[in-house]
Image 1 (cartoon, helix red, strand yellow):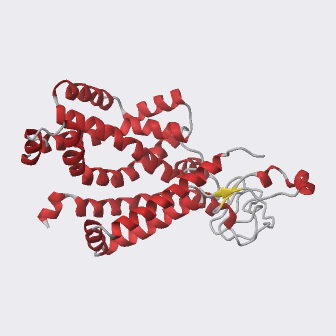
Image 2 (tube, rainbow, N blue to C red):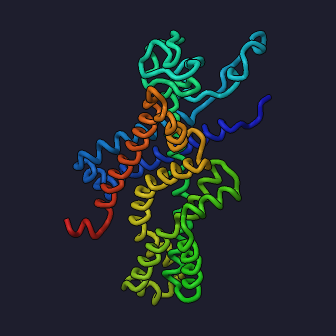
Image 3 (cartoon, helix red, strand yellow):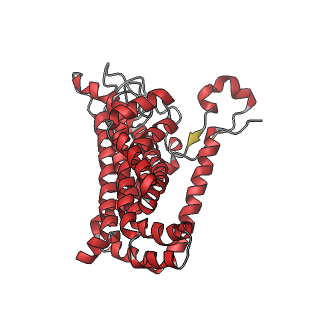
Length: 348
């Protein structure tokens, strides 16, 4: 009997995310602020279009995270090969199991790019194939999952660290503030890319390691912002009144400080996503990024431009997908910032 596999964990994570999304949608439907936010957001047509496209990318990433193994009959097990026993995601199942060629083929081509030999699947590779014959559209769709993992999971690592450090430094001040400032000033004095490379080389190359390395090097800016906002909030009248009534520091922080930092945290979450995705592409340039990511695809395709004739479709597919992902995330982030930032709302 097979034990717990990696794709079981992936399926469980997707189920939890869907449950959280349903619960959030139900809560938002009954919350006045959320309903007003949705109405204001719906008035921005460009933001709505970007959100729809970004939601499509998220759906592709989730579909590539749901996998299972097909049953193989015992009499066919010896001839099935190892590929038959590997789990296949929903994205994989959109393409035939043998949907590959021997080498390059141009988009919608009927013959191989080199040698002019007939293809096994003539005219069906919409974006062509890679150097090892894999369908470029298939590889591009699978690139959204690493991007979402890097952008979302790393941000979820960064936000708790930044909130704890920033709020403690801003609220209590004195020695705690000195220690926190010393820590983030030290990290800020080291070039990010050098620190990233050093951390990944020490921890090893992998999804979790890359997320941790990016998280360690990116919490400083948000921590500074939350510290400065906490310094302002702790001097407000209602916080002073709560302190005079004998309310504990923990209760003041949880009821009066952190809730008023929510809009900053949410804005940072949305805007930080695209920055993290681009940073992973830089790591792929140095050979320490994630396998199958857009950065890795771009690095593999860059030398193909020097071929004669030029192999352009692999680089174009990965670059376009990365561009659209970052662009839609930035447009949605700008809209969320405009709607949640009190200074912008006051100006409007």
